[in-house]
Amino acid sequence: MSAPDDDPFTPATHDFGLLTRLLGYLRPHAAAVFVSFLLIVAQAGIDLVGPYLTKVAIDRHIARGDAAGLTRVALLFLLTLIAAFVVRFLQTYIMQLTGQRIMQDMRREIFRHLQRLHVAYFDKNPVGRLMTRVTTDVDAVNELFTSGVVTVFGDLFTLLGIMAVMLALDWRLALVTFAVIPLFFLLTDWFRRGARQSFRETRKWVARINAFLQENLSGMAVVQLYRREAKNREAFAGINRKHKDANMQAIFYYAVFYPVIELLAAIATALILIYGGAQVLAGGLTLGALVAFIQYSERFWRPISDLSEKFNVLQAAMAASERIFGLLDTKPQVVSPPSALKPAQVEGRVAFEGVSFAYGEGPPVLSEIDFTVEPGQRVALVGATGAGKTSIISLLMRFYDVGRGRVSVDGRDVREWDVERLRSSMALVLQDVHLFSGTIASNIRLGSEIPIERVRAAAEAVSAHRFIERLPRGYDTEVTERGSTLSVGQKQLLSFARALAHDPRVLILDEATSSVDTETEQLIQAGLRVLMRGRTSIVIAHRLSTVQNVDLILVLHKGRIRERGTHQELLARRGMYFKLYELQYKDQELGAGAQGAAQATA
Image: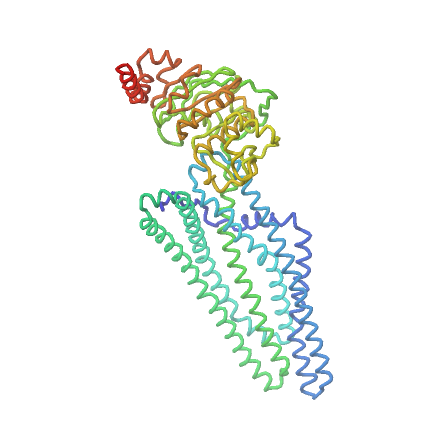
């Protein structure tokens, strides 16, 4: 996979800003967070009770042989454990539920933003990478909310409480315990700098794996036909190996960090035993206090270890949020103006005035395009592949904005229109029909509130009703992914029914019959006449048989209009259109001539 597939990101010199933005997702769930916070405070208080009860049991009861008092302390210890269980259960449940709701909100926001982005963005970003934003990256951020951002306060409260109790028991012994803390901060700083970069690398290679899988699984038929299995396995192995190496880098930091934390805790315990034991022997400290001190020391390092784990969660969430917010901060380049045009009625007059256009920084694909399509007129765009026909349609539907010139509908620049109103006045029938999961009827409706009667009428008009009725459940038949159980012709008939059911003012046919066999093409010609009646129609086709009866034909070559006129006028000129016609029909006419000669001889 090449470097352009990488996600751009800004190195984390703005952690506080990222964290503040992430915490903004907690605001709609403030009540649940507040309850969880109270439970965390209660949990921190309960965690302080156990070692103190141990001290009481040793000094007041075991040392004096008081079995009854020891039993009371044991029961109190048991009640403490039960209370800790209940509090932990409620706190975990509430925060997990909150995290799931935040994850749901974030995914909805990302998906909504993806739908608003301009088409050019998807030209540059693989589908697998964008899927990673919605899935893996959101999961990483979810960890921050469920086990990081709120529970960190519990660890802080527990840590401060333990420090206060240790200082109260014996401040000198407490200072001995705290002596190793500077080493912990040095270790954490080393881990922070290395772990963040390893998390970035891991996220990058996860995105590449997803992009590679999506591309190759979608094109599996081509892979198998051209025997690309071995090459693709090798390519995937390379990507997978890079992902493994990135994970191993992160594992290295984990493998060093946690054992060193345990080592620091062991050193602190050894210092307590050396200094505290001497104090007990000298009579300056009770045995119960020493045992409690050791227990507090163990609990002192537990929240520190937990904080370290939450710091790791924070690093992963920061790496993921850099990518998520990078996506959310991408501004759509095609948007409706503040006072957008939303006419109640659309006549369907289309005009291109001196239009030139290039994709990004590439060479021009259209130059000085001028033509007008009056309401109800039928215009065809013909020309070799790459002549610029589809680019004209993309500009009309405002998938892209013109570089120079003006594209207008009903005399108003398309950039002045409300984008949704502009596109809802048009219907586009593509060469490669995209069907969604759902029923036949839902694929014709596409979410619109179109009654089933109108759906059936549209299907009948384009000759799709016959094959739909033969399906197991008719219009309620489920469509598999990408309509794989339907033929190319059937899918294109459904796309015609879809366009007719939405009753557009401007109809665009982009190579709509290029993949249809001759018999099916004859079936839909009558439907096409119904579909185009009374509508502004722009037809792109390689098959000149589909454009012979239109009002105007525009012949494009290398991004320019070279000829214009009706079918008969262009044939009479014997120019580019004539050559296209001659190439396409020479064999057919020769065959027909031979058949006529044979009949005459007979």
